[in-house]
Amino acid sequence: ALWRPLLDGLASGICSSASSISGGVGCLVQRGSTMALRAILLRHGHLFSVAQWSAVLEKVILPSLQIGAESDTTPVRAISSESPSVSSLDFVGEPLPLPPPCNDEGLQKFQAMSQSDDGSPSRPLGTSELLVEASFADLRHGGDGNLSIAHSLKKKDAEKRNLHLQPFPDSWVATTAPIALGMLSDLTHANFLKLGPQSREILWPLIAKQLVQWSVGFSEDEKKNGSGDADSCRAVSRNWTPCEALVRVSCKERSRMYQQVLATVPELETSEAQGWLRTLSTNLSETLMTTVELEDLLRVEVLESKLAGLGRFPEKIESHDYLSVIPSLKTRCIASHCLQQTIPSFVDQFSNLASEEEIVCVLETLDKSRLACSRARKDEDLALAFQEAFFDQWGDGVEEVEAALKGSDGTGHRGSSEIFFLTQEASATRAIVLVLSYLYCKRRHGSDTSYDWDAEKFAEPLLLERMEEVLSEFLSSEEKDGLLIDPNVWRISRERGGQVAYYCTSFAGVVVDILKMVLDLDACKFERQKASLYPALCSLIRVQSDEIRHLVSDIFRRQVGPLVNVAEIAI
Image (cartoon, rainbow, N blue to C red):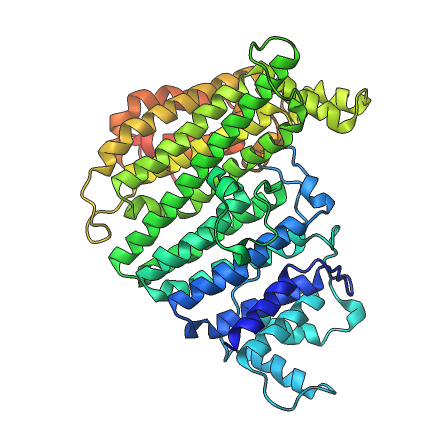
C-alpha cells in the first residue's frame, strides 16, 4: 500500500507535460523522475513478486512511458534521416549504465561529500536515495552516467561544467525516452532473470509489447479493440505511430537488452537459457516480420496512389497524396534495418543454442526482408516517388537539390529509394551470412546444446548460395560504378557504404564478412569449396577497397598456398 502512491507520483513526473529546463539541462522533471524510479526499483526490486512486478509494469511504468512518448510535439518527431545507416539524430540521449553496488567506494565518497554540505541531513542516505542524489549530480554536471565517479563531478565549479547541450531540450523523446526504456533493460537484468520461468512468461510479454509499440506501432487488433483497462491506456491514441527517433531508441535498446540477458545465460540452467533464447529470437522474428509486412503495404499504397493520380490504376483510390506516405515508409525501412542489425550482437549464442526450427524461422524472416528490398530498389515508379518527396521537402526549383541529384559520386541518391532499400537489403543479407557462417564453421557440439541436428549440413548450401549471389553482384557493380565513387568512401566502406546508393558500397561490409569466414575455414572445407571460391577471389584482387584486397591476400597465403605446396609466409 505504501509503494503505490510513491510509484504513481514518480510515474506522473515521467510523463509530465511541464517544461523544465535548468542550467542547460532539459526535461529535468521527466528525467529526474525516471532516474528516481529507476533507483528505487533497482535497489528494492528484490522485494517484489512476479505478480507485483506485473502490476508495477502494467499500471505504472509502461503507461507513463507511452504517454510521455505521445506527448512530445517537438520538431524531433519530424526529423528524417537520409539513410537507415546514417542517422540525423545523433543528439538523442543514451541509457544510463547499470549503477555500482551499494558498497561501491565511489558512492561512499559521494555520500561523505553530500553529508558535509551545509543544509544536508546528518543521517546516512538510504541506498536508493544515495543513487538518486548521485544520478542528479551526474546529470547536472554533464557526466557520462558512471556513478562511481560522481564524487569527482560534485567538486567541479558550476561554471566549469561539461554540459552536452541539447538542441531540443523540451523533447521527451530525445532526452527521457532512452533512460526510461533503458530502465526496463536494467530491471530485466537485475531482477527479472532471478525470478525464474514466470518472469519470462508473465513479465517479458509486457516489456516486449512496449518495444514493439516504439518500433512498429500498435497492431490492428489493438487499434480496433484497445488493450488493458482505462488506467493502463489513459491518453493513449490507437492511431499513434512512432517517429524515427523513437524507432532508433527502441531498436538500440532491444539490442542492449538482448546482450544483457544473454550475458547472464551461462549462469542459468540449460533449459532456462534455451527458454530465454527462444523467447528473444521469436519476438525479434515476429517484430521484424510485422515491420516488413507494414513496409510492403506502405510501398504498395505509395505506388497505387501515384499511379491512380496519373490515371494508370483502374481501382478507385481515396487519396492520391502519396508523398505524405513516404516518411512513414522510410521509418518502417529504418525500423527493419535496425532490427536486423540486432542479430549480429548475439549471433554466437543464438547460433549455438537455438534449435533448427528457431533458426529457420529467423532466416526465413530475414530472407523475406531481403527479397522485398531487392524488388523495391529496382522499382522505377517508387524511385521517382522518393525523388519527388525529396524535392517537395526542400521546395521546387532549389538549385542545390538539382545539383545533388545529378552528382556522379553517389551522393545524388541521398534520401532515395535505392539508398534505403539497398541498406536494408545489405543488413538482412549480412545477418543471414553471419548466422549461416557460425552454423557452418563454429557451432559447438556436446554439452552446450541438447538439439540433435546437423547444423553444418543445413547451412552449407544456403551459405554458398548467398555467397555466390553477393560476390557476383558486388563484382558487377564495382566494375560498372566503382570508378565513379569517391575514394574516401572505399577507405571506410563499412561505415560509409550506406551513404551512396551503389550495390558495391552498400554490400562491401557483407563481402568483408564473407571473406573473414573463408579465411577461417578449415582445410577440408576450403578444399571442398575451392572450385567456386577461386574465381571470385581472383576477381576481388582488382577492387578498390583496401580492406577487401588485404583479406584476399590473407586467404591466398593461408588457404590457397598449401594447396599448391607453398607454406604460409608470415608478414
